[in-house]
Length: 168
Image (cartoon, rainbow, N blue to C red; front, side, top):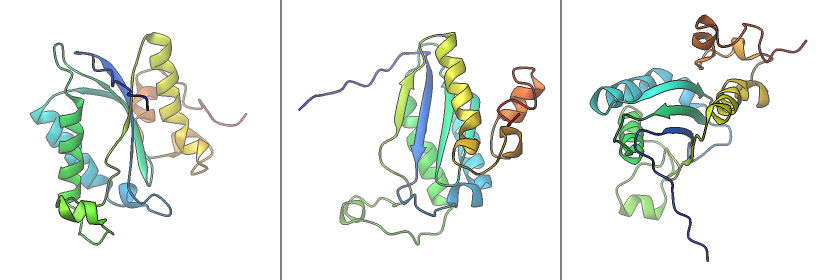
């Protein structure tokens, strides 16, 4: 069996994918986007980080984070975001025996996917992936039409034209 080491770089830039435990047909993240936003805001206040790009889809999210110099503790931040969101949601989800034993909610997958962003091109590819994701999943025909994304901020900052990712 292989052991994979997770890269943790103090002050690094990371791309994340975080999923709900029950994905099929689940729209919890957009149904309760204000609770998710509040969880992010509280966590950023307590343990600052930059989040230049994000997209929230019904059952998962993608984002880019920049951690402060000398800080590589993204696991604590994700634990806080997930737990703060979960506390705001009624407890009707299915919970496994393992989760019951550990007194865990069953909203989120325990793990998430992270990637250390290597350079400017890697950053841009991941930002494009984030902003195009609602189109990829068939929710909208153009990124500008998805309200749960940082795409509009990128347009206002001149990083994308408004019609980026739209069909010709």
